[in-house]
Image 1 (tube, one colour):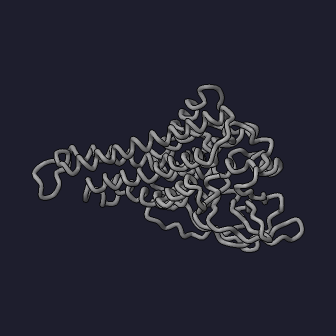
Image 2 (spheres, helix red, strand yellow):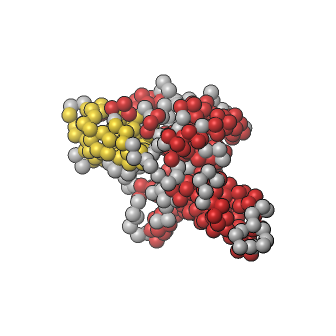
Image 3 (cartoon, rainbow, N blue to C red):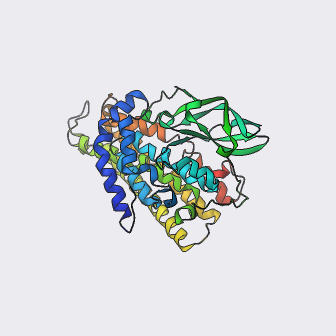
Length: 387
């Protein structure tokens, strides 16, 4: 199952390429049903997506962030919802470095592909009773919850913050993911009503001022990188949408004659201008993002600690890639006109997915301000994202 050696990236991409036909065949089903098809999810596991950010000691791949980003982008070319599951599978794996040895072994020791769906939107409330917590609350945007074995969420108990893992079968999925785009991600609310959770399934959360101890599995180079390498698991979805939008506009320009016009779109100055601006936005954002991932990986390899400014630079690269992709798609839509409005047309789906993605809380427009706060040394509005 594993990959190794200098050609690990090649192996990861080849395995991803092999499952693309199955993913593509079920993309429409996911869009219609609000979650991935079981066969699509099985294909992601077969490709090794679940192991990209899992430590080698747990039979994971522990790949570099750029390899993760390239896998995500390749999946996005056939189904954005399937690509989003690169994040669904790997976010919890990346965050588990401060959990106990026993907890990570319990979750992934016997099944490295086990899915832990996560959301940090609204902490649950936990009451300690003996060797358990009684957990209640409702959390939003829990992507992949239909397929998860555990639901991971922040939990407040007696004034202390924990990360808790609730058995998914004891929680209720609130079917409210009825959105403009990214429908196949299944990012519903999950409700817990007095769910009894063993204390072993709750890990203390550490603030920015503390050096959290790591368990014995999370000692590799990947885990010396800033936590924002999680951007590699989903920002490439937006970059791919912008790339596909540009391709669609180029095809359209050669055939479409706009209403009340006597010349093709390709000869209209406004369309040319929109395409050129979109192309510049996409290319520069993609280069900036991939360069940031490579620089972080190289610095981690040298064993050099990351400054606040360097962490902010990575956060800027991810935020800008998301937002620049959104602006690029908007340019394409403005150039394409009514050809982007009809249901079933490629640009219509691209537009819907991009509009949904660019409002994601971790990389929305307001996160530019979070970067500035770090650089200007003023109070952070979302400090955990820049640690």
